[in-house]
Amino acid sequence: EEIIRAARTLAPKILAAASTELSKSGPEGTLWKSQRAALKHLIDSILNLEERSVRDGFWPVKLEEPLSLDVKFGAAGLPLKLKGRIDRLDKGEDGSFRIVDYKLSDVGTLGQKKKKLGKTEFQLPVYAKASLPPDLSPQTPVQLLYVSLRHAARVVEAWSGPVSEIDGHLRLSAIIEPLAAGRFDVTPVDETLCAACDFRKACRIQQVLAPESDESGDA
Image (cartoon, rainbow, N blue to C red):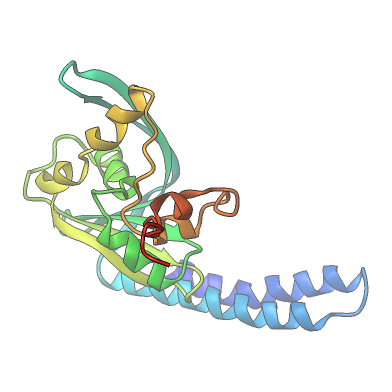
């Protein structure tokens, strides 16, 4: 808690220093004024979240740590190495764990990601499998959490349950096997999967999925 109090004291000083630096290139603009207020609100929200975590008995044990996971798929057990970088792993005083993934997405988008967990969304389950100690009791409680930085550090719980059930959200074969065979099937579960794609303006997926018009009818 002392660290959090120190952070609350330092945050306004850091924002003031940023304003001083920006003023060297010209008068403080309206955009920075609005962004400064938004940043202050976000910092306060994150610190409030940290205070709740401490009160709940959680403390980070991994931050921005690279990880990898070796998996096998298909009847032949083909090997695959998944690599990533976990934002945060918290451990509770009761021995439970929380996987935290910070996102710039809004809460609505994160709610959609939650619905697709284990179908097309595997990031959090992979992080859990790769970062949790391998000798945990099967009943060890685990939470998979998204934190929306766009919406003032609001938390969306993607899943919670015993660690033994994590594997149920790692059914990767349905996605990996077609790719390994050289097939890149365009079959999104719904249109929201395309919303954040950098190539959506160039992609013809909506035309491909659109029902064919009936041109055989009478004029």
